[in-house]
Image (cartoon, rainbow, N blue to C red):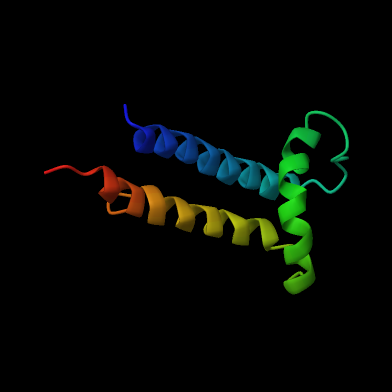
Length: 97
């Protein structure tokens, strides 16, 4: 395995994990009585809140619904596809005819 393949595997895991955490965060918004400062919910809110806070200042809730986690799922999915998809930048770098 070369360095690019290892980097692709690590990046794929990290981006996939972030998408999963934001999906969990979307589900947690359905239950407003949940305290995000208690375990196990803190494991979801700790890595996602630093990304959500600045975006919430730019994107107000629509109809009382916070859509910022949905935006982040889209951003991370797009990054993953651009870098690691079938015709992604890193995938094309590892291609050898």
